[in-house]
Amino acid sequence: MTIIITGYILDLIFGDPQGYPHPVRYIGALISLMERKLYKENNRIHQLAAGVFLVLLVLAASYTITRYSIQLAYYLSPTLGFIISAILAYTVLATRCLDTESRRVYKRLVDNDLQGARKALSYIVSRDTAELTEAEVVRAAVETVGENISDGIIAPLFFLFIGGVPAAMAYKAINTMDSMVGYRNDRYEYFGKAAAYLDDVVNFIPARISVIFIGLASGFVGKKSLNAFRIALRDGRNHKSPNSGYPEAAVAGALDIQLGGTNKYFGKDVHKPTIGDATMALEKKHIIDVIKLMYAASLTGIIIFSIISYTAGVL
Image (cartoon, rainbow, N blue to C red; front, side, top):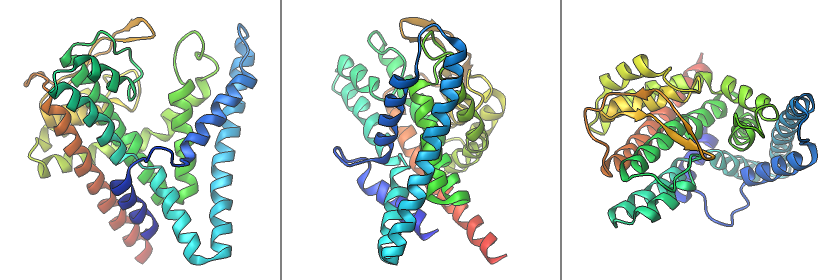
C-alpha cells in the first residue's frame, strides 16, 4: 500500500515529464511495431487472429517485464525494489497529466484563441477538432477528463490494489491497445476487436466504482453529489461504450451540464445520446470544475481503496 500511495504522490508532483522513459510509450511502440508486422489488408479472418495475437503478446510482455524487473530490483536491494515499484506505480496514473493537458485547452480559451484550443484539445481526444465551436471544445475537454477519471486514475488504482504494479501495467497495456487500435472503422473493425472487447471487460468494475468516488467527491468541491448519482443511474448507459458513460454521467450530474451529442471522427459524423440535463450552459469554467472534481475523486478513491486494503489485511 505504501508503494501505491508513493506512486500517487509522485504523479501529483511530477505528472508526465517530457523525455522521461515512460513504460506506456514503450508499450505504444510495441503495439505500432506489431501492427506493422501483423496487419493485412482485406483479410478479416487474418485481422481477427492477428488482433488476438497482438493482445496476448503485448499483455504478456507488459506483465512479465514489469514483474521480473521488480523482482530483480528487490533481489539487488529492498530499497531499490521499493523505488522501482513506486516509480512504475506512478507511471500508470494520469491525474497530473489530465490536469496539464486539459488546462492548456482552458488557457487558450481564456486567451480567446479558439484555434489554439482546438489544437491543444486534439492531443487528448480522438474526435476531429478543427471545426469545433467553443462550447464543443469545452464539452470535449470535460468529457475526456470525466471518462479518464475512470480509465486514467480509478482503474489503475483498482488494479494496483488488487494485483500490484504488474497487474496495473497490464491494465495500461490493454487501455493503450484500445486507444490505438480499438476503433470501429474500416482499418480496425476486426484487427482491434479483441483489444476493444478486453478493454470493455477490464473497465466494467472500475467505471462503476468511479461513480461512487465522483459522487462522494462532488460534495467536497461544492458540486451536486446526489445529482451525480442520479444522472449516473439514469444516463450511464447513454454511450456507445458500456463503461465510459458512467463516469461522464456522474460528472454531468455533479456539474449540472449536458454532455454527449454529435461528434465527428475521421471525417464522419457519429451521433451519441446526450448525458445529463442542460441546466447550465457549457462554459470555460467547467473545465476547471472538472479538474477539481478529478482531484477530489482520485483522493477519495485512494483513501477508500487504502481503507479496504488495510481492513482486509487486518482481517
